[in-house]
Length: 302
Image (cartoon, rainbow, N blue to C red):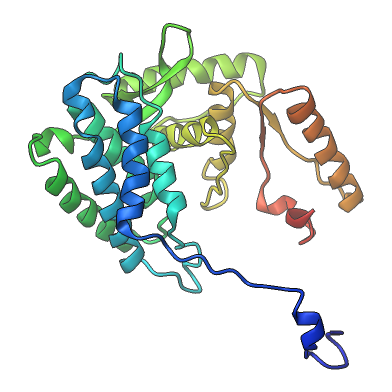
């Protein structure tokens, strides 16, 4: 199997030791059974007016997932348009972060569903035309399954949820909505001030879109194994907003320092220190790496 010489054929005696499994997408009935039971089980202790929406949320998620999978196909440019059960799991995971004491009416739950599907689907789309098309699909599905709600109120912007503005009885951040950008700005400005007191000063202008990005990043950090690729032009504030979100989540920032002599050995040494901090000491850490620091294509594979 030498790529520069010799044969590329595999003998049957060798090939018999290998097997390929192809698992097809489950049927809609199976998917509905799985996710509806998860959501219904979580909402069982909620107010009856809220818990009755469990099956609708599952149905709406499955239908929207199907529309997205059939209309947004992968290509050379959109190679990440891969839609599978992971997206439905992420939506369900967001719904299951709710607490009964903060979700006492169906409207808040409906808006949370919109927020989660936009984070899972819309945030991965690379063209405005795709985002617009998705929004049309999402509005159609919303009207179909939540027709008894006032659509004007349901669609009121901003639809923003975070876990750093309200806390439960154990002083743990509760995943709750933020009604206005003014409230969100007040909290984020306070957090930025606290960050600048003990870290290198970041002079950020927290306009609406920047605040949206911070809440999106904090949402990712709050999820198990949360990770994200932040895409944008150089100097647009990706690192700064990620550092602010890290501070809000009470994590530590870990970055490598690339020098002229920095190589694979040094990179593995840095990773070892990161693993000791996160895995052995149990310190929550954000590993922040820019594309300019990937000076060797082997880094992501190391």
